[in-house]
Image (cartoon, rainbow over all chains, first blue to last red; front, side):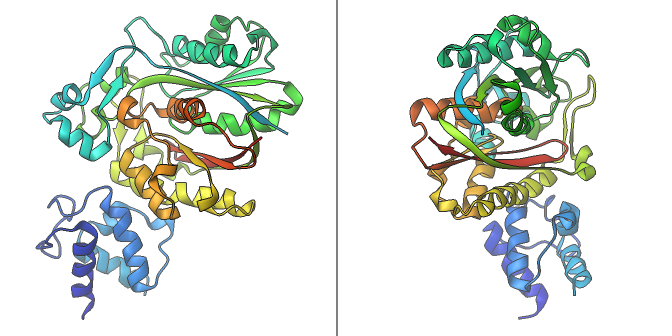
Length: 77
Length: 310
């Protein structure tokens, strides 16, 4: 499974919603992600990708779209 | 040594339901319950001040402890909703309590103020004698400011809680505490003079859901206490969904986290001590069993405190 597919699976699991958002579409504005699903998403990203996301990186904008999450993961590679 | 000797609280009589609060922002009670767990909150009368609420909770605490206000060594009043820049409510609350001459210190800190004051009191009581810690808030006046933001207007209520910290005896001994602040996020939750409350809810929840469990783990690890061994968690009552997530992060049953947010909403710096007051009267400390207090608020300021039943 490629990384994008894995990300969409994570989002589906965390939000319990269908994830039909375009890669650059806001996950918050599209109603997929909310304030309380966001911490769960961050924890799932840490677990799935084997990274520790420091509190200083916990800016909701970094996780606002599939593309932004990918950019963040790239920055941690 | 420092002990939690007694707790007190005071809530206004006027109840505002989530149906009413939801209507302010074009929503309904079910939506309010889903996003916050809140069914009703109390609003103070127009004539009441933060100092009035503080004094009533303080008097309740002192009466139950059988102590006179004049015998206190210090009073802390934590509040983020003081009616004026200075003087803060501490000196007026002290006067209303009959504690003229007792040093009274304001802790102008929303949500985490009573935890910070409790931690400070535990370090000062050996030198100063009994210290009365009060958290008092009138959030309703902030909530009523226009424009009302959907995620803010429905959350808050008014009330006051108090705790008497003494150096010699009490229901529980204060074992340890951790406190922290990070001004990086000062603008994510702030109240400017006369303006509506500004809250970046996503940032607040994201940071709180990580920092509160981390602070609790830090104070527990330092004292060799597994999270599952804690009798009760008495937290700032911010939002039921947040409390549930913190319980999950610590691997502890949600029932261990005392909650009264359904009835009182988020009363900011007052909430942790109101929760402690209700919990101590309904359940109470058990000898040797740990209890954890924790809070997170604007700043951000956060921390956790460990006590053990005597």
